[in-house]
Image 1 (cartoon, rainbow, N blue to C red):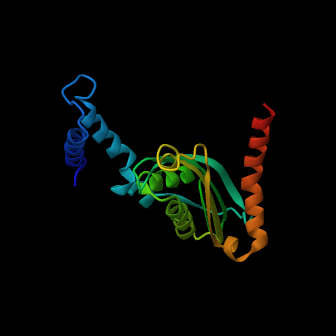
Image 2: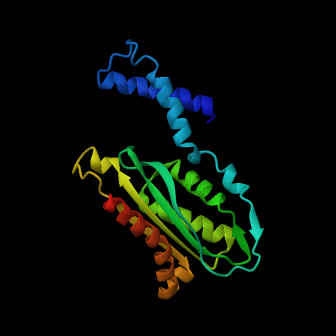
Length: 201
């Protein structure tokens, strides 16, 4: 379905939702909301229908680096697949290059693609790890995701400020405990340091 047709379908669905929950769509406050919501969903769920950016992802020859490369605390926003409420947090990625390397600016693009679709945190973590592992042919990939889920904070148990942590390992990070520990040190060192600084204030 083309984007403009998809937006129209979403817009009409929002109108029906408003009618079901008895929102007066004729008021100034709400009359344009269905259109705004449709545009919003088209944007924040764009990864469902467009993987062009992943398909043309540029890799570079490895100049000889065989140690761990790490990019920490990439912010992400997504929708929980179970309740369609936001989940958000950070992704940290460590990998051991083989013949190809991926530019640092490309890692946030990978995260953005897989976060712009309804997600479960565990699957999201695996999606990022699998893509980088297979696309780069890396010797190892380790991904850690820390996230808050509004479906758990706004409703149900109402567990405010709880943080869910998931991780996924591929290659050497899965088979070698020492390599996995090195990745964890790189990722968690920054997190623990930041937390201590916040506590000091």
